[in-house]
Length: 414
Image (cartoon, one colour):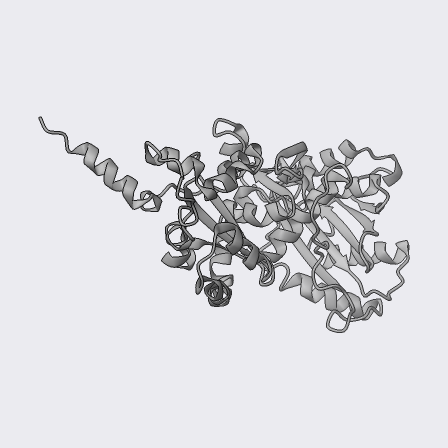
């Protein structure tokens, strides 16, 4: 048996996750403790209010939600009665036996497993500490239950390593949108190593999903919440977004901040390998599109960010093999927007002799080959990624000629 404990700040989100599974027929509520009602007669709000009433006894503790999954070996055959006994025993041994809790049996994976939803706030308002709960009480409870009920030990069980859904692109209009988005979000967050929201979006967008903070004036932005949207074939946000709080693990920006910090270290071992793969292509000059296609053959996606004039100001690399995301500037100067702009083949090299002479630099940029690459894309897609994937504009990414012109304008003779 393998036990996983996830703490959070949204009882509604944890409960809604399980209840949605029930409504779709992939889960069943098989047990309750501490609700003083027949499980068959409880509405969603009966369940929520019982748990929320306890959580409200402590205004200072924000982490008041405990979501546990107990996972069993593939070949284990466990009746509802046995699963109820195991759940009760586990909760008792981890210090949650007196708390109200709900037990759901899920049937959406290749191995049998149950989910338990409860709160760590007692009727007195005291908080049950979650510090090292998984390494101490949970581990002791697991070993004891394996012996008592004759379960296959976790070290030998044929249980999937992580409860991560298979990652595939969201096909809006065909897939169950909410479930497809949730699967992508959970899968990307669990397997990719990114250090910022733009980097997360770089990985999500490959699977036709994007995370949005909303406007700066919105309450969601201030509270560091997130909405996850599906993207259509043109890269536009479409359908109805789902809140981070309704996805298992509650991947709000506030929650992701911890992962951003941890991934700074976790992605480091993959940095040199990614650079070597890119270096093999930098030995010969290429166009932006040629460079992008060559990288895709190596399982690496490159995302260009450009301003309205078509000037490249940001580059992000997503390595789908090693599951890491890097901004070009984090890899080194040669991989930054400025470095690659100087390396790409000049759009003027292959111009015929009778090319129209431009009056100014902006006119030249607008009709250049690499600007046309952007203009041929969907304009809404360009705007979307400009908003959600952009980083701070760097003046050193501007062409040298324009920088010199700007300096000349400052020299005004009085």
